[in-house]
Amino acid sequence: MKKIEHTGIAVRNMEASNALYTKLLGIAPYKTETVESEGVKTSFFRVGENKIELLEATNTDSPIYKFIEKRGEGIHHIAFDVEDIEAEIRRLKNEGFTVLNDIPKRGADNKIVAFLHPKDTNGVLIELCQDI
Ligand SMILES: CC[C@@H](C(=O)O)C(=O)SCCNC(=O)CCNC(=O)[C@H](O)C(C)(C)COP(=O)(O)OP(=O)(O)OC[C@H]1O[C@@H](n2cnc3c(N)ncnc32)[C@H](O)[C@@H]1OP(=O)(O)O
Ligand SMILES: [Co+2]
Image (cartoon, rainbow, N blue to C red; front, side, top):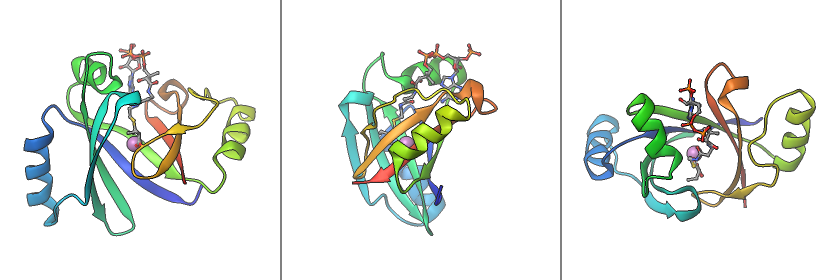
């Protein structure tokens, strides 16, 4: 794994949270993008080499909607940049991790992504992402 690519934060209200993080970081988000397949609207802030991804649910089936209902707003996942996501999926499965999608799917910000179940990773949802 190359580096932490982004930290995903589940928020109830994107507009309010964009304003809050703009004030906190002193910079505006560089992009917003809706990923319908995940049921999320995202916005991205650059912080040095890393990024903060704010996520708001677009429907009640969204993992973000369920997460906020159960746990409230907060850190939802940590994403790692990988060179070869298919090789990483194979490696991590061999190590016994539960990969939630064997076939990488389209994420936000020009990435393909895969997730590891938080039950195997000390309660933290892990995202792998590779540039496309
Ligand atoms: C925009 C695309 C992409 C990007 O490019 O960056 C994204 O970041 S998309 C982000 C949203 N997508 C996902 O989260 C996809 C992966 N997640 C899942 O597949 C599911 O959310 C899940 C992790 C398998 C849980 O789904 P499910 O079992 O249906 O939901 P429950 O709500 O019943 O949760 C069961 C259990 O797991 C706990 N949980 C849920 N989410 C998280 C989390 N993010 N971190 C830690 N723990 C989590 C949940 O609280 C439940 O625990 P208990 O209450 O103790 O049973
Ligand atoms: Co993410």
